[in-house]
Amino acid sequence: MTIRSSISRWSWSASCSPTTILFIERKLYPNVDFYSGSMFRPLGLPPAMFTPIFAVARTVGWVAQWNEMIADPRQLYTGPGERDLVPIAERTAYRPLVG
Image 1 (cartoon, rainbow, N blue to C red):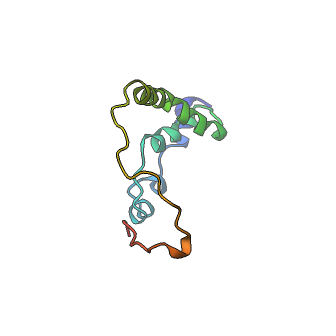
Image 2 (tube, rainbow, N blue to C red; image 1 turned 90 degrees about the horizontal axis):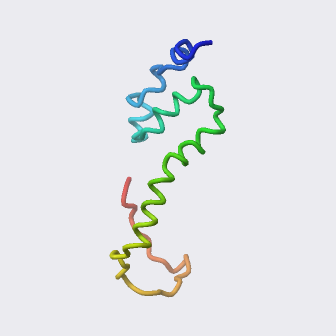
């Protein structure tokens, strides 16, 4: 099987499109992994490797952000200090922010 025939075999169908009702009703907004993941199988990569590949691709950004936080800690937390733990039964109920 050539890559071209494999790609056409696994190309997008109407059920995978981000414009379907499933995506719209659930307010799902796919990122680049949604699209690049569909190309891993035609390239012969096993599904068990998809997540590690996504993580490796982001590692450089994660390390760069960590280095910025360590090397230049200008953003210091200035909020309230340590607080006592309030038991769940005594906590005030809040309305959810979304929904």
